[in-house]
Every structure is written in structure tokens, then in C-alpha cells.
Length: 113
Image (cartoon, rainbow, N blue to C red; front, side, top):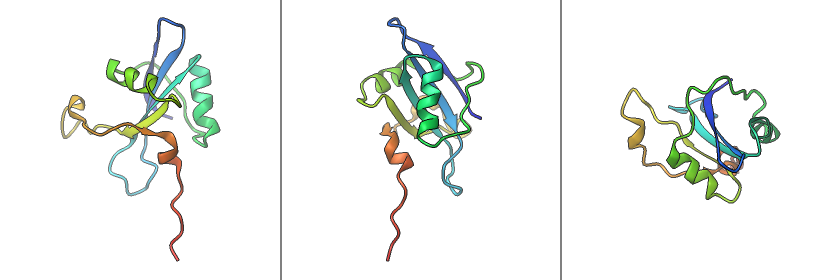
């Protein structure tokens, strides 16, 4: 389950934005994931195929901003993430973190010997 939203583009494709809980148990904040796909169902399927099984989009409470849409459209995979802004501390517009490819989020740490 996740908060988020979507935006339909003039060419018929959509950009879906989801706020997910932190993948690390000790992580301070969740992550914001952006997906560019043909439709909402395909966007969610892309995330489920990566192992994020419990991802659903209910409503359109937190649609992607124009800057987020630009970021995901310029990424070759069309699937990016960054730490979700903490609105209790500051304004979401002040986030300076760069967008990262999804494989950086899903990468498993290598065991140290």
C-alpha cells in the first residue's frame, strides 16, 4: 500500500509517483518512486516485477510534480527513486537529493568476509 498519484501525458503515457515506506528498517524516511509507462496498470506491474509486491495506487493524492515528470522522462529506464521529503522538517520544494536508478534501491549488500 502506498500514497501517490499519476499524471497522464499528452502522448497518452502516464507517470506514476508513489511514496513507499523505507526499505531499511532503520531508515528515517520512505522513498518516492517514479515510473513512466503506457498506463497505470503497467507502471505498477513494473514495480511488482522488481519484487515490490504490495504496491497499490489508490487515488491521486500525491501526483508527480512537473520537475519529477521531467526527471523520469529523461532517465533511460523510466524508473527512478529518491528519499521522500520529510514535510514535518521542511518544505518538499527544498529537497536537493538527486534521483537514482531503481537498481540502486533494490541492490542487495554484499556480505563482508
